Length: 530
Ligand code: ADP
Ligand code: ZN
Image (cartoon, rainbow, N blue to C red; front, side, top):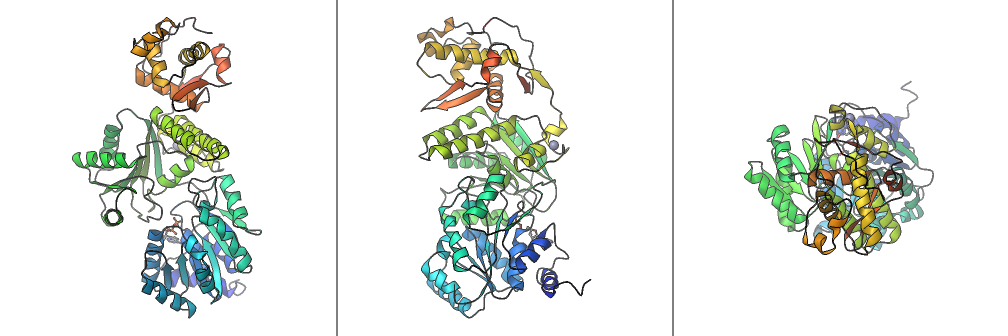
């Protein structure tokens, strides 16, 4: 049998063992590598940490010629190149952080065939200078890393990726491989189309990260919640806390430090030197918490990140999954923790509506946000919900908050009717727009200036929601949004509106069930229906 095996395949195993020092291939690495060695195109979808790099590094070394790796981030390239050089592999990069001499040296080495793997950013690759340079030696393969950046539907679109379809025209016989850890069905299709792949084979790995435990909580006092989460589960360990804004990164990092949890901030507002310093500290210290915007993380290969916490709800499940995937790359237990709240949804909606994107993208962003919110509010196993989003079916995992406490649902129809009918009455009679807080004030029977001015204490729903506090009403509203009974309509204000789905609930023809029953669920019914 071994006699039949193509020598190039055994060559691949030899490189794996002798150069990289690993005993065997993982998952479908071997199939992918064989396919590329055969000179065919491939799209590789693998979760972060599963081992994408070897899939192109080894065939690039096995095939005659030099390999070209297109990668969007300088930091990532430099790490990879350093690691490869450490293994005695002739790798180099070309990027804007290099001096003119360094660039010339690298170009000369390339032209003489002294480089086996060249890392380059897409915008540089597409310059005439770089294209002419590449033509000087035979190319073994093109690897397009973070390939989801080519998709306008994804969460990290980079227009310069679109130009990479040129490679097909200029090097029609050189195999290309596109790799990504982001893989909704639409993104997948988009990658092959936009990069002009011809009959590429798709290699889809399981997206499950069984060692990551998922937990989602509703915000109450998020700083305290975070502090408890860290000190009870991950004290003295390394972790990442994602925040939506730079300011919040600063505030939370300072807070954690005061609580005795070593933390640093990382965001695009810091100068390059500070960012690099913080990143280095994070990589080399094992008890540091990085409080960051999503600017941090792509390409950070730190295996022992024990937790990723989101203190604001991310805007899409793709982004969320990618970020949580940075935890536990060593395969040991890790936690993905998230706190979310009504304000997050409103803030994201504001960002979407106020952007100058075309309507089709806005609509898409709204759908992604809705999916994210539904995930938060779901009583399903978190893993089942996440994997389903990526087209993979699975079973309840026993390693998430939903599995821990099979949540009882409660019949929230009356509470829902109180909210929906308040909104219905406000809209019927008034031109003005009213947000969540206003509606809750009405239910709680508060005489605020505005309520008094509009005489909204006369509404039939005024004061009929005193059985719950404000936080509970917010939570109920969130679940109504998650289930599609309420919509946020933003035109400068965050206005809640009814949806077609809310009509049967208002008419008493349909019940609404929710998770996490409030402590007081005895509800007195009143005739408030329109
Ligand atoms: P990805 O790019 O998919 O996030 P990497 O290629 O950086 O993942 O690989 C993640 C880690 O797994 C790295 O430390 C890498 O050395 C290791 N790894 C990859 N393939 C193997 C293998 N076949 N055997 C052992 N370790 C591997
Ligand atoms: Zn589960």
